[in-house]
Image 1 (tube, rainbow, N blue to C red):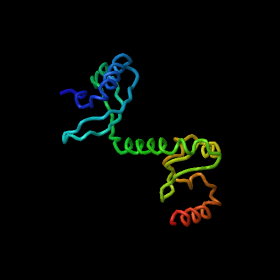
Image 2: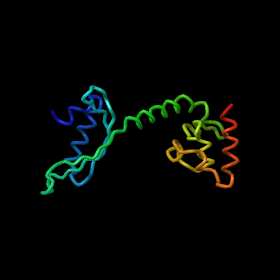
Image 3: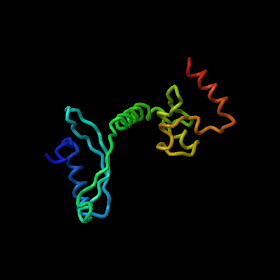
Image 4: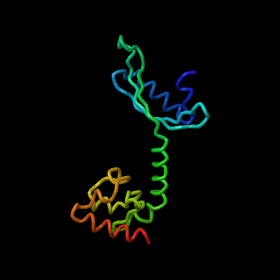
Length: 151
């Protein structure tokens, strides 16, 4: 069995392209994320970087460093679902509109919120809203937030 046999059929073309690039551009590390079948039959996401070191005498192979990212991929899917569900309602609003969990971590922010804050979406989602509040206002805002969110 070859490593590529563990890659789910839906991702095999991307896998093939990564391997091809690895040999076409041997000095450039190649990155990818793929769904792979586990021994127990479950499918998990993994992402990694591969380096072509076949010409390196002490190594003589392809070196891969990878990690499981199934939980992150699930979170990304939930985020996309929320954006698809709420985006058309809140995108045109001129107000700050966001969704945060009980601990204050952003799950959704509308474009106007990003404009006012001066950040890109990727820099905001998954972070606590208190990280964006001046220290001298933080306690007052937290008290208000917890009072409001406990209703």
